[in-house]
Image (cartoon, rainbow, N blue to C red):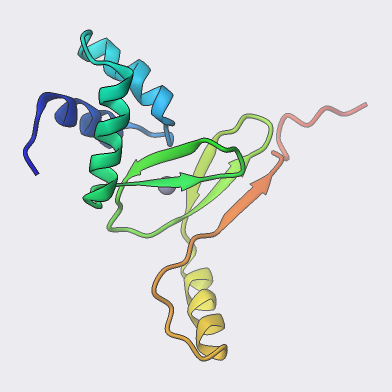
Length: 127
Ligand SMILES: [Zn+2]
């Protein structure tokens, strides 16, 4: 894939992102580096990068797709329902469990994504 300026800018944003930005977030951040970039270009570029397998979208509970660079390190997500923050986690014991479940059902696991939706135990309002 040819590295055009919009592709370089958007990929850079996603590589630096600690969160899982939506297309709108990416557009807002892209504007800071590349004033002339249009919404259409951002969406088109995201689709191209996704089709090429360089980035991937996760559709969490919301109807917004959140993007991240395709990770060599598989991981699962916990979504904080109060702040919409996305926390990445990986537990080897859990990975093993997923494989065992597939195996018990007569399959070899190819991929698995787990999303935990939760409320934080911290900052809990006590009455
Ligand atoms: Zn992630």
